[in-house]
Length: 388
Image 1 (cartoon, rainbow, N blue to C red):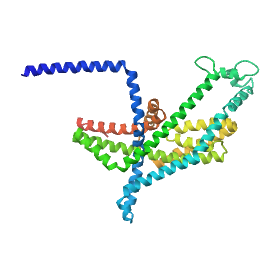
Image 2 (image 1 turned 60 degrees about the vertical axis):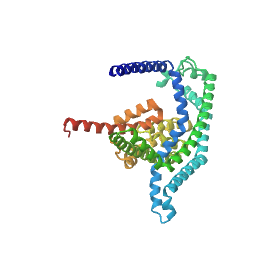
Image 3 (image 1 turned 180 degrees about the vertical axis):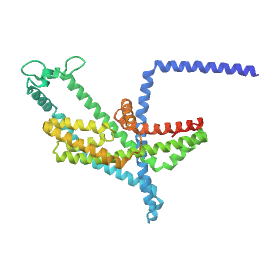
Image 4 (image 1 turned 30 degrees about the vertical axis):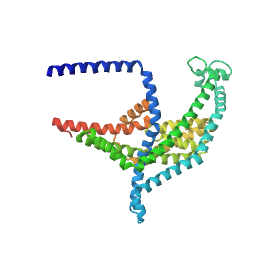
């Protein structure tokens, strides 16, 4: 009987090995199909991911507001504290979005439209400036020989794959990109709207959702593993939430100060560039530098070299003020990370996930640092190694 069972088990193992080999072969030869299916799946679940992200970011404000309602003398507020806090936070969020759409969006769209419309003017200004360069200037060595550079010669100086720049193809490509971006923006707005609805339900039924997740964890995980996961999820949550809230508050302060500063300096598109500086400031180290360079570059065309240099100096001073006084007061040394590690995390995050990755790389690195420190402490304790 044992021999028969062993023989059957052997056949069963062989069958599963062959089946696994066939599945692996089909996966390898149909990679494009799997990629397509994965992209479709990600498209379908995008609203749910957005909803989870919104619910996560609003969970703490809802919790704090719920405490306020519970302390109220009104009995209804005490009984329906969670419901009222969720509704209140969502109303504030919708109000903020509405104000941005009514007051900020038209200004930004108008500024962007002006920038695109003035590209030809800026281009003409550049080539007039190039023609004004004296023969003894060091930049003249980089220019082609001749009395005057024509627009076609200037275009041909731009390196392309074909060696020459096809203006018609370039414009067609830009128009195609604009159409694609409009479609993407529309899709993003629909996904965001659906995400808001999903987030609302997640926050309303937060207790039930967490209880369900806990039940699933109890069924499929050992108590020790479940305790381990809960412990590090809580640590990760504290690190990530503290980083997000601190960076957001710092970005709001810097964006407001930058807008006021640019308005005082009479910089064109001051509101748009102030918003840009605030948003990019959420990326440690590099974000504010990138936004500053963009602002100075456009200011050079709209206000001249002198105004661009003044703006560069003013924004540099503002960034130093933020780095030395504002940011430390808000964030402190909450991450406790080496600057080299932060820079590496930003580069790696940007390489894999773009701008979002540059922002997410720092808190993820901080979480990994906590895990690594705990693992090293555990191994040192087990091996009897004493450290400082």
